[in-house]
Amino acid sequence: MFPPGPVAYARSVGNNAMPQCAFTARASGRTVVVTVNVDNGPQPYFRLLRTVSEAAQIFGVPPPGFHPPQGLSGLGPFASWFPNNDQLMATNDRLLLTVMVTWPGGGRDEEVGLARAAIAPYLVRPHGPVNTNGYP
Figure 1 (spheres, rainbow, N blue to C red):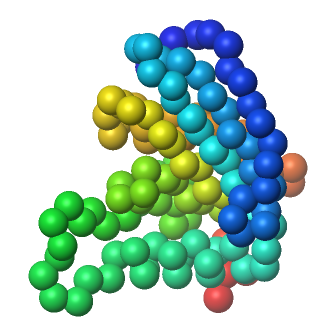
Figure 2 (spheres, rainbow, N blue to C red):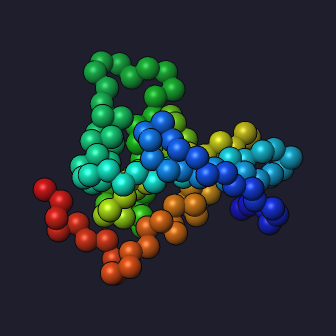
């Protein structure tokens, strides 16, 4: 999927005032950037579900190029790929995680695969699997 090689990273703060890290590498002669934003604000499930719902709303004829969020299995409840933004959002019950992929010339499958690989370490829970019992 992605050739082995050096990966640079830079820590920063996202537009939502939460910590994020940008990972940069080269693939097929192009620069690939994966940015992971870690949002520890309240109610991560509610905010994720609301983001998915609002991104899927269309009133009238969909605009050209519109693609609704696509649910992704294996990453917890409501985990979704947002094709219009090239980003994946999921939660580990405490954090709202957003992975943005910039891969010029990369296809959707490559972008989603890279986003899945980048988000997986953040979904690990110290006390077992994600528990959605507290979700309203």
